Length: 296
Length: 296
Image (cartoon, rainbow over the protein chains, first blue to last red):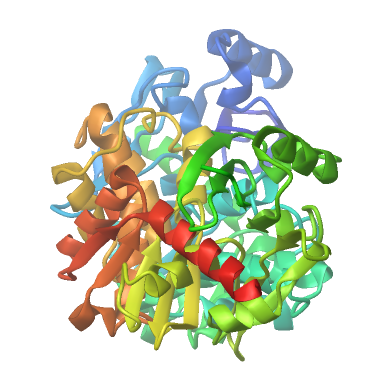
């Protein structure tokens, strides 16, 4: 099949390219580590030319951190509430009619500011494709976990938590690093961490994890699962007690890989909230093809 | 005055030596960076000999991480509740009658483990010297902030929070590092952070701090104060809502330098709790001389 469009999910550390036929079928795809942070001073136009040399000289629609002030060109933010039509109206053209970047979404209130860039395509795409209801509570876990509320297919509010980044930082250096080299999986230790995270006090619970290891109360092999449970549990418990309280009754749709998504499903289950896994790649493709078709 | 004893506060990164006369008067003191982590594979006996060569061949009483499994010799832990008599009974002699290390204190319950090593001398010393009441709520902020409850001069329970370490880690690398290079001081931004920390949700508040910077809602120059307020506020708010709820009525004694202690005083004030600063060096000296005299 002939390639009609290139859809590029261009993040901080990774890049995923989908070569799409005119009807949206994925003709080819590739994933590499040409994220914007690995391209310091990089020539984005040359990268785009290289992709076109490989897959065809066709229009290209990019999303993600490539549209940040550290990326190719600043695509700005659309203020929430935002739907696909609002995103389409604000699409940022690097080369008119030929190369575009999807804007991010911001939200501001008296007491809290938040931003997303890239996740909006998945979140709104999931609803557009019917992968989730038009009224839904969505979670997209990761380095910076996104939680979003949809109403009538519009993203009306969202919250980001530094869950994944904090786990990475604590694993790399500091008091807890020694002991966090094990694999993380759902099990008794993970769920113990989730329950210990209830009601806040993360700073003390983290130190307590180290103390338990030193006192021989917890084995090294399950320490990473326990600390992951603390962090993911803290994220989920905060959401369900605060801005995502409505999700307790409705359930949460988790857009993620089965591995990471499975941990969030386990944490939400332990906290008494129904959740199900949604294919995040399908959601991205649905969103980006929908945006592209609305641009025509 | 003749030096009769050497008291050594020997921590992870720093070491403080007090050369004491028989009546407890400080004849000389010194502070250096010969903490145990900077002495990997170090010869502690040689370090002790060097201190004696400088100040006199007298008995030496050490406290702190020098008594951990990474230090000179493992001095173990005394289980809370613990008072000075319990500490004295468990003092670990490296050379009988000549060189000793004070044990740490541990606490274990079904849901939470904690340890301290070094802080017990200050905390119990503060009460022994009358710097604080025998029934008091104490806070010793730092890399790992200690909160302790005293009853009848006995340390009955305590909690450690990774407050200072997390600020250091976030300043060093990751999403928030860019913007945390400013000075931290009490002011509107610090107190805004304290209030934003109420009720938990630290993971989301941290990301929100970055979003506010990017959206131009907060200036770079006050970002470090705001994030410090978030972390210290989170620590104080968790304590006052949980294990330190009793301190709301009684007030908190903060053992710290005026700089760091001042931030905790400001946070506790903002959260509606009275607090006062206590001289932490005087508390350490009172504790270590009391332990030494009880050993005679």
